[in-house]
Image (cartoon, rainbow, N blue to C red; front, side, top):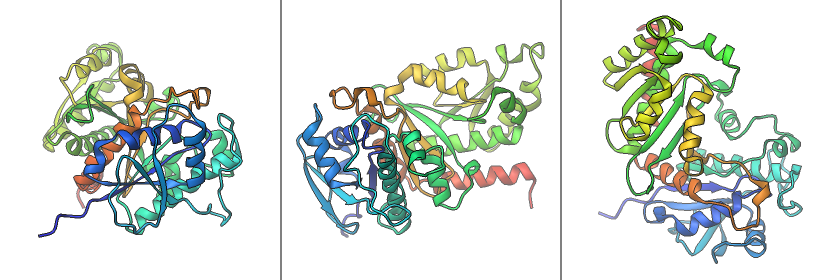
Length: 372
């Protein structure tokens, strides 16, 4: 029998005025993923050639524009680029006038065109997943895109509401991408005030977050993950002295997760939970609100963290850093997060994700509304 065809994964550079093109070029030359998947950059050949010629510290790569159906494997010494084409209004989204380190509508339009065209290529069967570089929100808005970022843009492209998608932060263990180890964090609530987040907590939302986390960590780790659910209040409520959310909302969610076959523990005090997780006691944490999960992950390893979108019918991973306009062209751009994002996308595509997570999420949703 002939060998199975390698799946294709698409990379986008984000805003061309930022470090996105630099980390894509560095990661392309360094990733071992070429042996397992076919990589393609969706972008502009001219922009990438200028970046290679003008910015410091980049690998020497040949650049070639190709068609979406080109069957060849990718390799570390030759960048294969599918032209990002036109923006949603049919106009060319060229980055020719973009100045490095400067916010511009042209930069935002170029970044958005690459993402939208990558999504079309996945929809049309040319690829299985997308790995995105960093956007600049002001540039995106200047270009007429009224979305907070990649996550919402892709949700709307897929016909979903912004609230249908969420994120997991994945922090590979030091030494990754080789070892199948690391720490994942999913948030029950995310971009809202702390007052609103506490008001919106529910057992059903915690169960869904735990299901999503377990469904995503399985392919990344290639085994059943160990999940910890964080408490909301100091000392996990201190037996009700500091609040009743732990026995009323969180403990029932942990029981339901365990009953579904997930290795779940909690609620555990957040001030020691992340220390325990960082030492390998847990593979994943369900955080109750934004800063409870984001602060420890960024302290533990911001530059190698990966953002993985939950709820999309496709694989999408991303760097966890911004455009870093202040270091563009200095040679200081670190490709660690892009390398980790490529590795995570490769593992998820090979495992057939997101099907497993969608099935688990549907099961959680059915459980929260009673059987029908």
